[in-house]
Image (cartoon, rainbow, N blue to C red; front, side):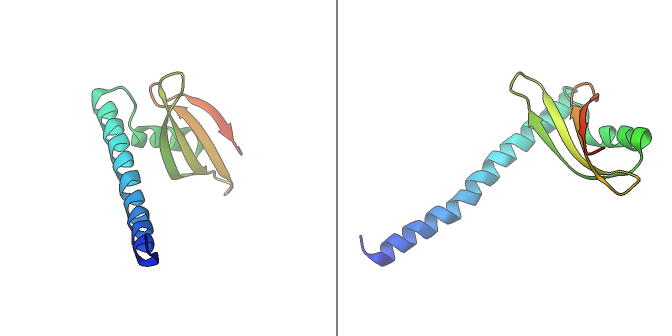
Length: 103
């Protein structure tokens, strides 16, 4: 294989990787959407409203994770009323705050 062919093969591999990652994220987000529609998990917007009422502050970012033992949890980045960053881990089925970090 000559150098040009090798470079083209590497470039093709690098271009294909983000597409594969995007496809896996798309299938995961489709599954999360289906879980919300089925009522298996509480929508993130409802969790955010609860946190605003209970803790004050504001939402920054969130991700939905599957737990190894089953179920799902939201990991929510938050800025509290004092301006400090807090991480909430919230059970996606019950809406209960499992733990906080940085509070």
